[in-house]
Image 1 (cartoon, helix red, strand yellow):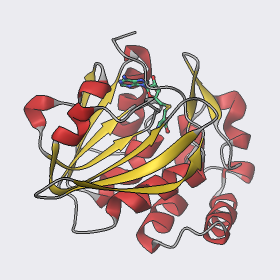
Image 2 (cartoon, rainbow, N blue to C red):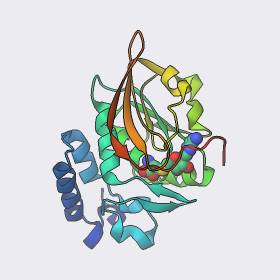
Image 3 (cartoon, rainbow, N blue to C red):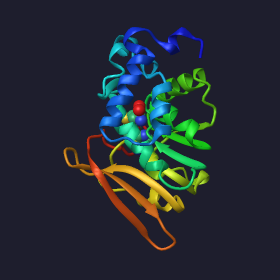
Image 4 (cartoon, rainbow, N blue to C red):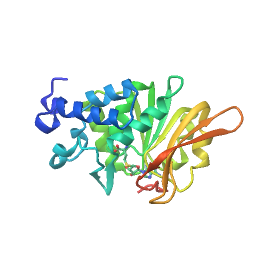
Length: 220
Ligand code: SAH
């Protein structure tokens, strides 16, 4: 990329991203494809300019509309958990947010269908992904807890906001062998889950404690 805004300077440089990737390794992220994508993807363009110098701290940062960009470790962990298994063709993402998670995942799968309930957030995410030349994403404004029925089944579903209980609709829209990575539970007691759909029934694994914004019903 030649655009200087993308390469970044000082706190937004490639060296800063190298340090971020080193930290992710120390925290247990092992998938090299994921680490490499995070190293090569500028993160500062996804947050407000005033916060650009903090974009590589491993924290959640505000992205407007009362929402936050997910912590890099969580993005890496969820992406890794989703990729584990056969290659992913069709992926549903619930909660586009600023589009950072979408951008991390896009080159690693065939196609992403991304739903966000806040129109203004998705518009900005769309524009950023276009600038980054990410082209394999379809967007929709709506309630992601209902999934995207006309595009189902999905090989993978990634949910970036926490429902109290995993919506049945999402499990139903998984292909056989498909996996769903989703945080669930009440505030302060959320767990990150990896659910795999089999011919008969589903298998669920708890990946650890997490803290996400709640998955909200309806379009805001
Ligand atoms: N991965 C995103 C995370 C954004 S936070 C990023 O890196 O920026 C979670 C997002 O989920 C918010 O943008 C919020 O508006 C959205 N969200 C919450 N409930 C939703 C729902 N029912 N359907 C679609 N999006 C929802």
